[in-house]
Length: 253
Length: 253
Picture 1 (cartoon, rainbow over the protein chains, first blue to last red):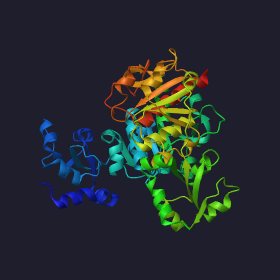
Picture 2 (cartoon, each protein chain N blue to C red):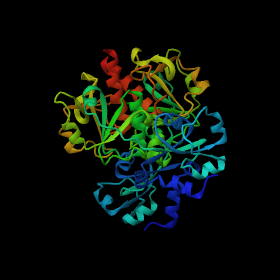
Picture 3 (cartoon, rainbow over the protein chains, first blue to last red):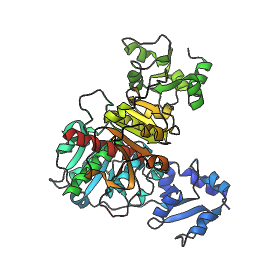
Picture 4 (cartoon, helix red, strand yellow):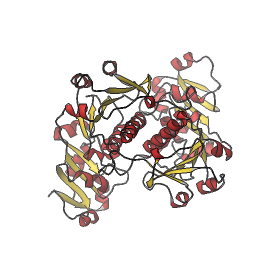
């Protein structure tokens, strides 16, 4: 039996301040829950009997069995998917040497939850384990972002940190990449297996303060060049095209 | 002065059946309107005096000058942007030889308006002038799709057509590409400058009927391979990574 208070609590997690106060986030659907359960502390689950009966074991004692109808009342999705869960937000230690040794992403004020979730998902695909976000980047634990990750949020570590400070703390020879309209065609550059790729805000790109710290200015060429076209790519799309090329080159070596 | 009836009419264009009956669509914001006005028949514009005063000429006589407050009442956006317009839907003739001669995209039941708009935008970036959509693909003229194109819908031609019939009508040696989990690593293939790239539905991929007609099965490798990762990429992301690689190879030749 799902109490009104519990439904109210679940819905309250749409707001960042409530997620922060409680240090939790909401996730929905069997795929996402299956990815999260082995890794994140689960506060409680709300699930249909069909979902529960399919599980060999469930690492939480607070499971509320509900009808499809009750689940619909609790869910934030148009089409609820058997199960939803409230999980504790993880807090990762930032290890700066990770950036010197492996490839990471930095997001400078990304605002759209869907874009952010899509970026987390593609980072997972391309083996990027850490994403560093400026403090004004949208919350990684908003329900829309969590859903858009399709489970990748269980594997990719999200850190919020002042980006100029972070970049300044790196070794001098660690490459810091960013995409700019006046950058160099990135297909003509040897792209490294370590360092930081900075992606900027949807409307304004990379902030001035961060831009001055970037030592590798890249450009994604359009095709054919010198043609009237869209002025830019969506930030998740640009991130994907850049990450794919880094990994294509890395696989060749 | 903006009448209640006009506001009602604008809001009615959220529904596909109303857009179809009227053969129109809604677009908002100065960037999008600037891209559309020279190319599409405009039924009417709703704009602030600031926007109107900045235009050298406006190719429509039906312009309703409004206050910011009135614009907010008419707009479907959270943050209205000076101007909105109702335009006639274009109807393009399908020229099958285009596919034999240039690179085109085919979308097999894409359902998310945002994904679709993002695909139109990236197609424009990568010089893909025609997108062929299965009849069940979401409407290209839904406000969310139009906004997500950021103006690319003024340049990229969208055609709805039965895909098996379309593919069957192509020349025998025209390549028809699709991405599959059991396809060939697409970085190891010589990708052509012509043909059709088919992208499938968000949940189900490419339909069986279409899949049998694909003669080039591609796979986007993850990195590092053979690692636990996300099972797939978002369809707009996959489209971008594929189109970028086609164009990278084309620019090398």
